Image (tube, rainbow, N blue to C red; front, side, top):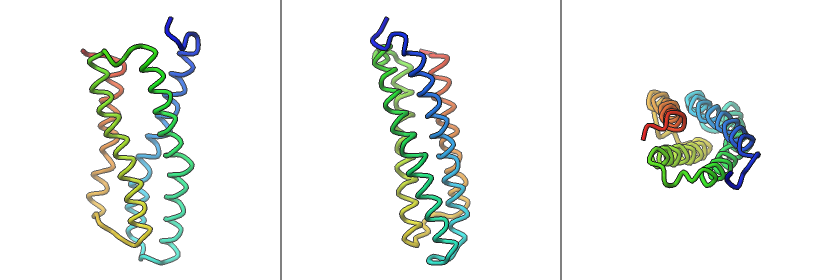
Length: 146
């Protein structure tokens, strides 16, 4: 047995639970942005969206991402994933999803400053990114095709 021993399945379950929380937030935030952009900067509604977005980041997204990384790295080291081909591609997709989280955080700050750099259409298209990436991550983690 590897170093996690009997805790392996508990760590795996925790990892999946926090991935679900993270993905829920990554799906919600761009939708928030679409609605937020419809408000005039400085309006009462603008202020409400700023608070909503900040809460989603601070209460769900940031803690979920942190826990996903902690539990994911524990699992990777436990099974020796660094020598497995499928894991390298999965890890790349996880890095991209983490970068997407960073982009979301930055875009929320831009909206809070009154900036509206992207169109609603572009935000709706960007909303598809995490779904596509997580589909590949799940396939790689379950099927382990190479």
